Image 1 (cartoon, helix red, strand yellow):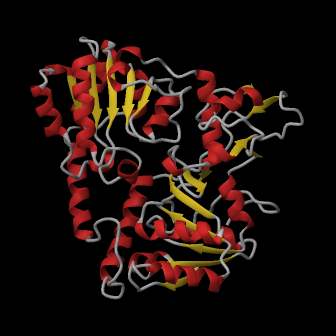
Image 2 (spheres, rainbow, N blue to C red):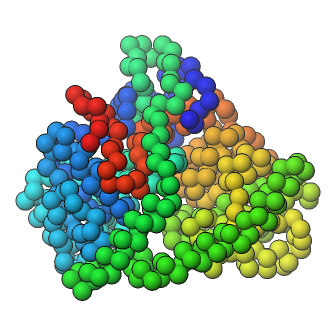
Image 3 (cartoon, rainbow, N blue to C red):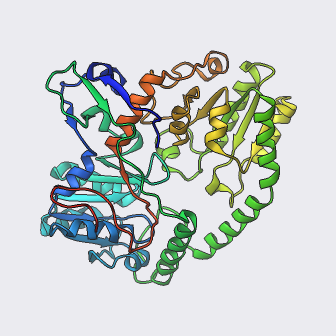
Length: 446
């Protein structure tokens, strides 16, 4: 789906494309699939911590039970309790301060040989990662897919800026007898697992999850959540989001089409969600505001005078205050007039592909830009931030010196990233949906 044609590359050609520049053979293991999924398939006593809203962890538990793996799940609040129907629940009603000693004792009592968690930056998970590291217990860290839709990110020890997959592993579907033999890399490796009505299912699961959490808040009174817990807040938020989506949709689509039809030279800046841990933990920006200011000032001073700057609001940020007023004020202050466009709606991959360059902090839109050959600069930490793929100069020089990524290196590295870090899954599919992951002696349906 992501690579249009098969790539025939030698192992020597693949080596420089690794993010850390470590040559194959120097501590790098050659694997034919996702290393985290392999670790999980070998585990026999798994402990699940917090997961995504909905039944994904139950689907994972059914898959693990195919080989009689014993699966426990820590229940932190009523939402976890509502979602947990397959794993053995272990309620934690203590404080965050008591969590380290509790978890340490729990791992010992259960004989846990693998931990799974979704969201590495959550407070309880940061503690768990430290304890597991000290105890030598592998941790499968999950997030929504780097490639979307149809994938979930799954890595050992950390994702995004904490990822070590490209440093420690080399994906090779066919093991090489000699280092210089040619490997026929499958056009895409793993294929996505896409369930229909993704957003509607996610909304339904989230609603039931947060309502259950709210109802049981007295029972888990010491629990500290990583975001707002009031379901009425989310109800109002998503009503505003849909109103704002439907309002400017026609105008934004028309403005986008005009850019394409007129061949306008523009730079594309997709904004991230202000609460995104990627932004707060893996960049020098604590929110989009400082990022927008820096980008617009640099554009005003250094970009070609005939070029335009196009911002796209993050889809999940529509229900919040947004950044339209900030962008409008800076446009006036910097005298940019009609050169700046702010979109609430738009086709993000197409906007990236047609642009003169894409500026991101560390969004997964960066991968979409690379797939489509767009010049890219990354302002934060990202798995794909690599000299062969992204611009390594300053933002001021990017406007005039950016060049498309090397196609050969891009294809090779995207194959590595996808097959080392992703697993096919629709995260918010219904409870009955199977995870189609293969393991020795099984077809992966569970």
